[in-house]
Length: 163
Ligand code: FES
Ligand code: FES
Image (cartoon, rainbow, N blue to C red; front, side, top):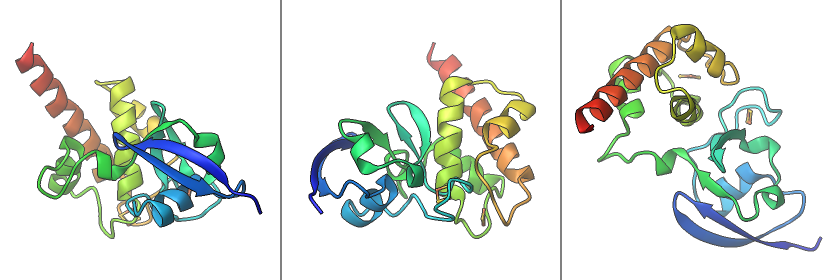
């Protein structure tokens, strides 16, 4: 099968690769670019474990062909924080016990990041609605919602202090 030349900007870095027309973005990210933060939970667009940001929108990378992402800007969990410099959302998930096994967490946090970009001061209901495409088999969601609301508050406090 002929392969296509694809250019992506991933976490601020330009990456070039060859991909078959049938290849999914999640496989390219994990297997060709070594970004194993986004997980594969279902491969059928239900669980949200594969969520990344593409051109400022949340997408499930198991439902995007790599070819469709040609020229796109992608952010994965690796682009949000690092072990030495956790993102406010990562810190909040840790403090509020928003994870147990952690399998859903990269997708949860990447989705929550986009949600707070679009709605920096959400209500609990808006968080629950905005996170409806991400499933967690462990936590019961209570602490995930709590963590996202706490992160929103923290981010708004920092923003106000800077103004
Ligand atoms: S692996 Fe993409 S939604 Fe489940
Ligand atoms: S923490 Fe285990 S699936 Fe969410």
